[in-house]
Image (cartoon, rainbow, N blue to C red; front, side, top):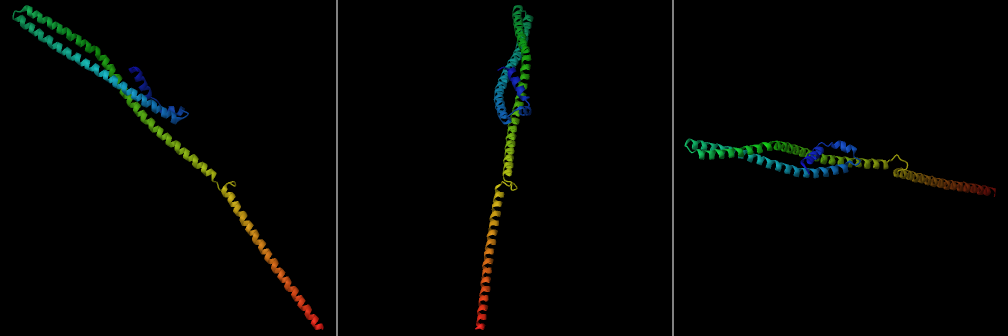
Length: 238
């Protein structure tokens, strides 16, 4: 995967609108689980890519420093060779002076080459530094987004459990309605009332039976009185 592809993926995920995605999802919890997996995998991939990009940048920076150092060193050698040539020429050693001047020219050529290499690397280093900064920033945003996703999932699960508990409670309340004539409580109350009415009926029947018995005793007493009076009348007549 190239730097550009990684940078594009990181930028896209870092700018993702979680709430908008959830609004479009038929099953938000499953979508959150998938997003968490995607972000986790992409973060791991991006971290590896960022590490590789930073490593390449550091190598470029080291090469640049070496070129800068080499240019400085060759410049010093060119100066030393030029001074030596001047000394020899002042002493009458023209041929030896020319040799040192030639060495100075070689050193200056190496200096120029190192300076050019260092200069050529500078735009690349600047571009790579910008890429690394963007990757680091995008990676931080992705990690923050992952934290948001995990928190959002926890919130969503808690809300779903609360809603389910509310549904369960409301169903229970509907099933236990004492005002409903078909409910168990109403049927039990009707049964009790019928039993009470039956007991009242038995009481009334018992009372009626006793009254009838006492009335029959009264009738027997009256009949005995009549018989006694009749016997008395007959005794007088005799």
